[in-house]
Image (cartoon, rainbow, N blue to C red):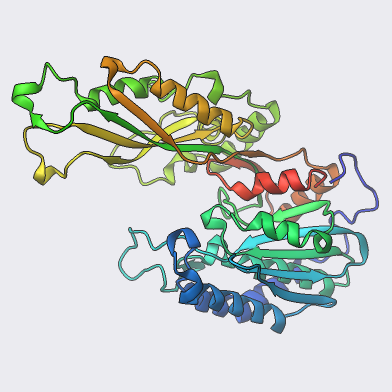
Length: 440
C-alpha cells in the first residue's frame, strides 16, 4: 500500500450510488447468502485442532463444497475458482477475478469452526441456525462463514454499477481456528498466482457496534504454558504437615506475583510491555466515545462486579496494548465434593499472558520461564512448560486515499464516521501475511 496519496485510485467515486449498493447487497443477502449460511452452520466442520479425524469425517469437505458451489452459482465477470489441496493439509478455496486496474487486492477469510463449547441458551445450539430479528445464531456464521459471500458480493456490486476494480484474489482457508498451520504452505504454493497485493482485506475480526464501519488496527501476542509446583512425593494429612511443608498453592501465589500485581493486575516487567503509539491512544479515545459504557457493559458481569477501570479509553488500551495475565486451567485440585484434609503434593496452572502487538513473543516466553523457574521459594520443584508463542500484529499507517474511502463508506451507509480499534485476541496469520506482503 502506498504511503502517499495516489490520485489514480478510485477512492469512493461520487458516481457509486450508495442506495443502489445497499439494495443490491440486501437482496443478495436475503435471497442467496442467508439460506446458504443456514446450511453451513449445520455442518460440524470443527478445525483440526478440535477434530483429529476431520479428514475422514468429511465435514470440512462438505463445507468447502457448499461455499465453492455458491461462488460458482454467483460468479462475477472474469472469475476463476479452484479448491486447492496439498497433501496432508486442509483445503483452500482460491478465487481469482481479473481487474480493470493494474493492482491486486487480496481478500482473506476462513471456513473452519471453533468447537461446540457450552453456554447456549434454550433454543440455540452450535449446529442449529436460528434467526432472531437481524441476528443469526449458530457456530461459524459470523466467524467466519460469511467471508467468501461478502467478498464476492462486494465485487459483484462494483461490477453491477460499472465501476472499475483491481484484480482480486479471494483466499479462504480451513484451519485458522487451529492457528493457521497450513496457511504458510499455501501462500508459498500459490505465490505466483497471488502476486503482490497492495491491499489485504481480512474478514475475520470484531467490531465495537453495528452502527458504523470498524477496522482492526492491531492484535495482541500471546504466551501460554503450564506452571507446575511440586513439594511432596505424595499427599499427606494437612493437620500433620501444614506449617512444616510449604503449600504448593502458596508458592504459586508468590510466583504469580513476579508477573502481575494481585491488587491491580499490572504486568510491570519491561519484557512484556511496549510503548503505546500516540495514534493508537487517539484512536482508543474515539472508540471509547463511540462505545460509551459498552466498552465494559457488553461483558456478563456477575451481580455488581465492576470493571478493572472506569475510564473507557484506558479500558480499550488495557484490552489492546497492555499485557494481561489470565489463569485458564488448573490441575492437582480435587473437586469440592472430594476435597479432604490433605496437603496436596502438587498444583499446576495454565497461564495465558497477552502481550502488546509489538512485543517479541518468543523473547517474552523465554523471560516468562526465567521469572518463574529462577530461585523458587523453599527450593520447591518448579517447572514451566512453554507452548509455542504467538506474535502480535500492528497495522501499518493507512494511506490517505484508503482512510478517506473507509470514512466515506461509513458515512454513506451509517451516517456515522469510521472507527479504528485494536483487538485483544491473537490471530497468528496476520503477522505472517504482514511479513510476507510488507508493502500491503
